[in-house]
Image (cartoon, rainbow, N blue to C red; front, side):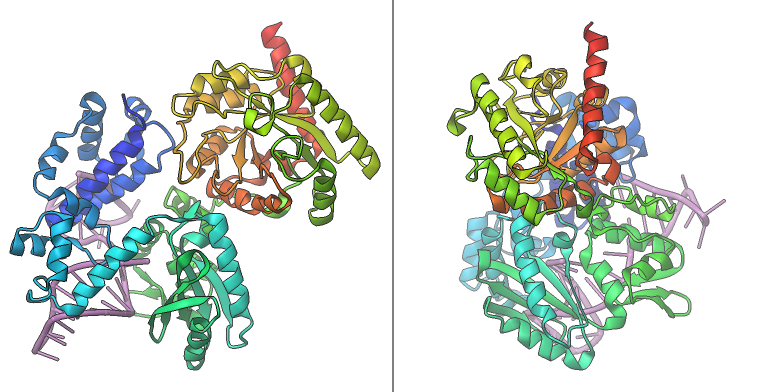
Length: 583
DNA sequence: GCCGTTTTCGGCCCGACTGTTTTCAGTCG
């Protein structure tokens, strides 16, 4: 009946917010936009929250919106929404997302010309009718048309990995300049969101050097076109991925407040400022100020900005207004997992299936470039035909090969693993007899993504030899939304000592952050893996760790921050549980 | 529509930029 009720409701509330914007009911619009954001980031099926009554504890959802959620659950519709839709031309809901197309502008055009479709609107922009309106003009119209073009082009967001490579490259180039006192990525890229719209970079320098820094930036060889350039800001298009990069220049003594402000998220900042306000303070990108005296009390570093408002510093990955502000107020910020905590990679493919390097090449490469204590080779099982998955006999030969290479290397570095397929009925693609001989078993779904896979996953977790569920939601950016997880899966994961994977492939980034957060709360162990198919893939560990941090994971939540002996213990505990249960 | 150790009514983040304006409205992040 409902594919993904949270997403559906979030979309409806988003639209209702837009409609209220159009109707110039500003604050009601704000409430619905907030509700949309909240519902969208709930890890749980919202029906559970209604049932348990926990919905009351969520800030931003009041009785009015709760009633509408209930109505939608019961009837599949919200009457108020159906009524509201009649008041706005359908095309306008989408158009409100286009830069330059605000509610006031659209409403005016609608009233003046009776225009209600996108097509008619474009025509009126082009034939000069809109430009002739009082308060409008040629330039505004040109900007609207440009906004439309940009909107269509940048609908596709960059993957975090891609954006990070570009961002880091530009940071290095800016660091070369001696006038640059500080330089850092900002926006969703600094928060390491799974996908990124445009790339924001901040620079601190003395006021007299601003122009020099901006000139240097806009004349980099990577720049295809300079879109805008002022005293404090420049926007360019770069050749790589045809992306917009914004550079903002700050004064050194405003570095902390500027960085805090431009990192966002918007929701985090709004909440943060709200708290500042309640304490008689005002926060802007220029600093924290005492409202009464106007005195500036912080701004140089982010730490002092947060501290001035009574909060601990908050890692950028957590700044999504998902409770981190309350935690920081209470002084209870967790110490998040770091890249340097990682002791090994437990999901790797070789030439035995669809990887492009031999096991030996992989082992030597990793030993040389990473300070890992172990890796697990986990080629596919036979159900994955396209990858020429391994059958029972292949697995035995695979194990012999790994023994041979370990012996050659002189250390027991490579663990013998497999990525076994979870078949449609939840059974596994290799028998227990084989699985029991292996050091590490990843169980994954590679077929029938578009259905509820809860039963399949639970059945797989109940196999005593399965260590971890690979890419648990099956999502891939740009092609598949993935199937819903459930509380039940987390519960069973915890009970059975089965870990869940945080797959760091840039197109997967799976588990999603909100599920990681939930798993951490419940105490489910996680494994950050690159799912490497070539040597360059091992670098994905960095964004896997970022993703874990977005889900508030600490070192102890991540299994591959432990020594191999400790991992063995985790496995043994699972097997012990099952010898009791199964008898 | 939401929210409350200054409030159950009266607020709702803050500042820059742009274009169209002689003092500001609209949009954006």
